[in-house]
Length: 125
Image 1 (tube, rainbow, N blue to C red):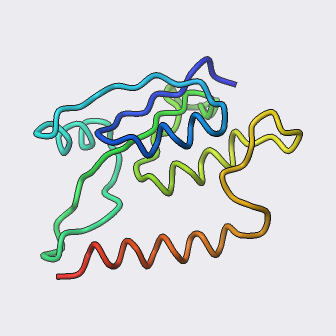
Image 2 (cartoon, one colour):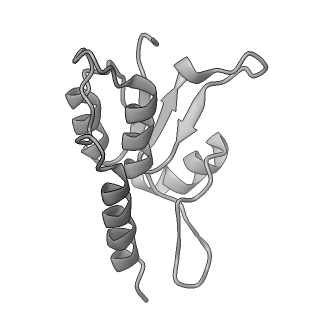
Image 3 (cartoon, rainbow, N blue to C red):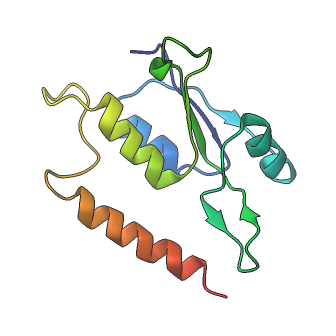
């Protein structure tokens, strides 16, 4: 387990998930005008598109150094609030109660569907 995860964010949704799962972390704040450049610099692809098809580069981004494969120098970057929740569930949830799940048992597909519909609402032309 890493000593800390590093969220890069402009909102607090990620901190709720990290606090709830008792995951230690450190936040790096990014000024709004620097969001797109930061995401590009880190190599994190866009999670959404603008109506004209161009990338919609947003925060938060989570960097997880505990997921470093033996052949790489860096851990995992995850770039969307819901994807961060999935990552925390898959990588840091412990069934013994030490780190609680963000999702009730057998509801991940329901949450994924709901998230897709909410994303679609915010992507309407």
